[in-house]
Image (cartoon, rainbow, N blue to C red; front, side, top):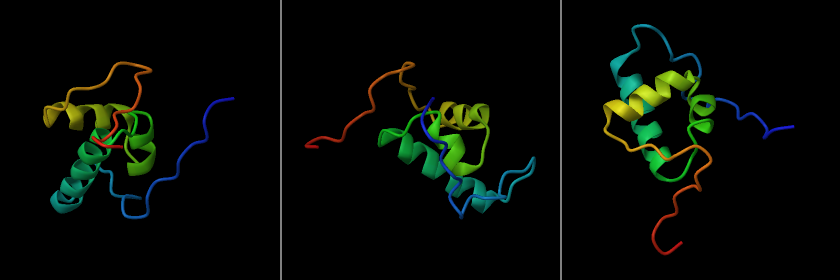
Length: 80
């Protein structure tokens, strides 16, 4: 038995489409980049944003985010 699945956040439900609203897409991308930097996993982010795994991975790549290795410990903020 694995970890429980997360539910998409209400602000992102139904916003994924082949031609997304630019403002909604910008909010999703900012959320993904910020949350990944804060330690969320590449498996959690698609669930929270109602996006596919590859869509989230591509967003991180477009933003130049270095991805952690599989099974890597989540990053911690300084002083935490």
